[in-house]
Length: 268
Image (cartoon, rainbow, N blue to C red; front, side):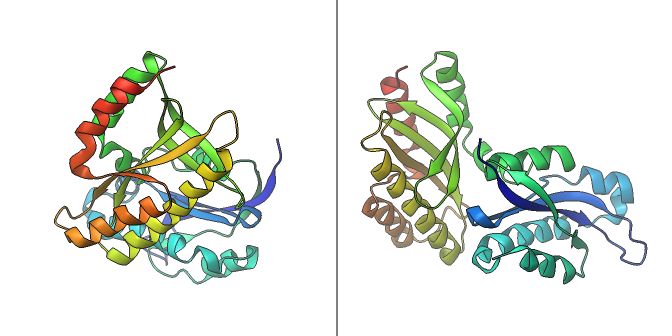
């Protein structure tokens, strides 16, 4: 398996810089060759509470800081070109969330390696997991389909041309290999649009470059929104964007019908 050089840093909660007592609450993986940088932080705060005491932890503030850290890496990914950029970012952190000096490692699959690092160095459930749990009906469906050998879970597909990978929670076959990705979109319209553009382009590349292979594939986005009352016009625009790139989009109200369709059509 081909490997690339990567770098990882721990994200540590340090409420009192003068004491330098900290606990791991996340990890960052940077792989310049794959143009990949992503942070994963813990969903809960059990470790900080055990170390510093429940009364000394402002959980709302800590959760907001972790969310902001993930967003910062996601929205400024293009500014990280080499190791020096990550080192500079780590050195400039001066609040309660610190980023350690990067360490090198060999990377074969950025998404999988980030998940492995999180489990080894942080542990517990990551903040990214609840997005999938926001669709318990899909979990129930694919648990059954996997047992019946009519579905797959946690499928990782390389994105042609851009040397990246997309982790797909659910997949099934019905003449074409359908990659089902649940996605909770932000109530911030700019952030939601940026993410939709990214997924649309990735879906288009997957479909066009697998069309003549033994496993032609299609991306399906099952969507929900942080704010259900988000403007109807904006939600319709996102669906239209996906259609422009030949990516199927399932609206929140269409999930029950989609589940019934998959249950009927999926085959081994």
